[in-house]
Length: 184
Length: 153
Image 1 (cartoon, one colour):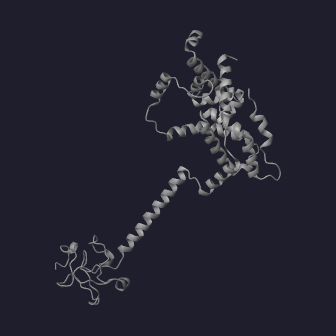
Image 2: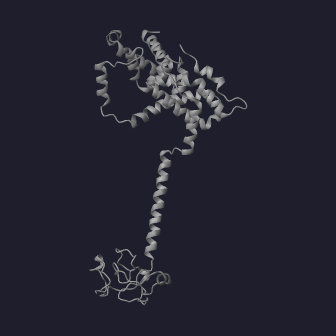
Image 3: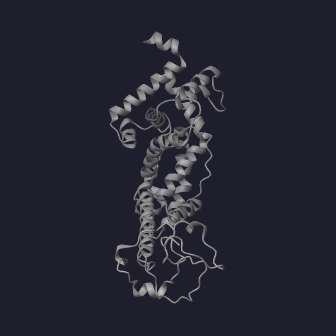
């Protein structure tokens, strides 16, 4: 499990003596863009949107980059918050001619075909509510515990447990409804 | 760890590996600097800017309107001005016998401050008396003033 980002990021992003904010920023982007965009991609559902999200965050943070003591945790938190709010803004900016219910029914009927590993599970993850999706991604991709996820999502650890539990139950039920009913 | 959790881990790791970021620090810095130069207005700032523009427009309109309002344009009704009769006459007044050629045609009531019958110094200095539409062959009556002449001529 990839348990990496918070620990390794505490040392290297701080501007050293004599290093300008621009050089520190460039070094940070070079070192962490991949991990940031990966998480954002899993949250948003597409690489393009994930990269846009990370770019928005970094561009907004650069003017006060010199004031950040430990940029990585802060940037990661900004990315998560931006995802949660950005999805809302994105939803208000895009007009959908077809209601979501109709789209969901069509997707169920056609069984969305998508490139990449395990497209069915990927599609189901993307349909989770954004809080649940964020909690699931941070738990099962980043390997964060409840307290760390709660800090990122600005909620309590019990809430995180609820998000993860409900998300897993939804996935389980969607992927194998018969055994889930039998299990219940 | 259950099957679905294991499957989830594998799938997320494989999906994340597909991401190939193209972000570069210098480009992001240039973008940030350009955005700082241009300035992104928040909704409140945009609203304030629109309000300022509207207030300026209203103020300008009021100033322009009051300038016309106090313009020395008319003599009391029924009086004839003593301005030189050699003033250029190009067309009859639009709504009043003493209105200058540039006066708006919609103003028909004399201003209260001008009811004394004497135009102000500014008035006499800047206005040109236009006689009532006399039967002159060279002057073509204005189409809009043909029936609105207060002198009844």
